[in-house]
View: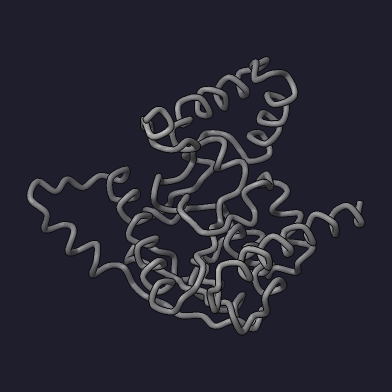
Length: 248
């Protein structure tokens, strides 16, 4: 089991290294939220190309948990990579001046995700870096992400790992315990949690996804029906925008 885990981790590092060498870029930037996904992605980047070439950027708002920023700072220090903090509150305030602006958790959450990705790409463009994505397979299949927000990236090192596998990899990589034990959250509003919003634990989600995949995507339990409905509803997030380019 340990040998298989080491092999899978080595494949990720090789993928990152190959993409980096072929890009002609001088570094990689990762949005480090203080959560386990971004922590694991950052750790893989540091192992692949060296921590001196990896920048971690925290992008908090007034509703962000201050502990997340501290955890991100501790992570980057432990990995030996640079860490910077840029508040996106002024950018959110500018958007709120738009004519007809409506504020709701859904609209504001998507706006935050897209602003964060815009900031990451600004610094990536300025410093000639690749943007590292932090989505995992569970989120990807469920569509639990913002289109052109947190699902946008130049490389996606952990998108083939289920969330439960992310924890397994993170423990192996010695990610700090406070990050491993905290409740998964996108940090889009106070008290928000992934599992609370989805209505299932990640253990239940991953078990359902694996069973669905093994049984031709036919649900055999209420949990699988709930997960399958999300997978089908959010198919558009996993596909390119409809177009006639191939036809024309």
